[in-house]
Length: 154
Image (cartoon, rainbow, N blue to C red):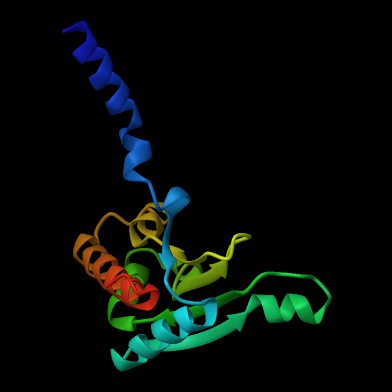
């Protein structure tokens, strides 16, 4: 019985760490089966197909390399769906600092490519938004599907 209690205590202590695996500090990161550019091409194409506005595509690595700062492939896509995001603003306008959404495709030192984006629940927590559970659920589900498509994990 003592071993069971110790094991359960250990596992319960780890539960916050396990729950946040893949999205430390409110960041969800997924490994991609594609290059940085192809990952963002796929995300951009599916967003446009779904009628979601793409506001900006920024190539961090190209900008850094242009000023002689070496940087592995790193690109950012900014996008938004006012039908969802605007509900966050009506709860707390400061959410506008984190929205529209952004997705970052990046290559690590080993050549692995990842796609990272802010967890909508983290954004809500950061801005003390407690009255948009249905919106958060829709945003989270949509981002999961879209990012899985972009990374080839669908």
